[in-house]
Length: 203
Image (cartoon, one colour):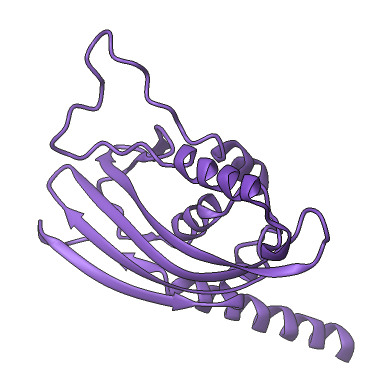
């Protein structure tokens, strides 16, 4: 009986720590005036552990969040710098990969919750707060190279491929003042190909 109680206490403590870690990324939006707000967030290994994923185990980062609220939407900009530990695809040795990400997402007010695209979501008009932890993780993951190579093993060709990955990984963003649908006859904008990998991680 004592062992069972101890297990329950341990589980409760772990759950409390998880809630405490992720609650740092809550942004209260209910009642905010229509203007810009700035938030600074910082975390390390605990963040990646609580995200329940196996892509990144160790790392440290700082994120500056710029929130622009209007009557119809919230625009969020995430500027993240830091580094994470990855495993080399060739040698299986760990190495440090720098993070330098600057991405955006739009949350439109509506009568239900729905993800329209990777960059645009609908949230309820009466939503009290938004937790941005998942957005931060997704943008960190998207900033990483598809081919994970230790710096000592990278050739000039590999570096060129990594630069191509970065260019292809840019997210499509439509600001509130722009038309969301392109003019007829324009080329269709490319959506980041790495979102599919992220969706698999979330399953």
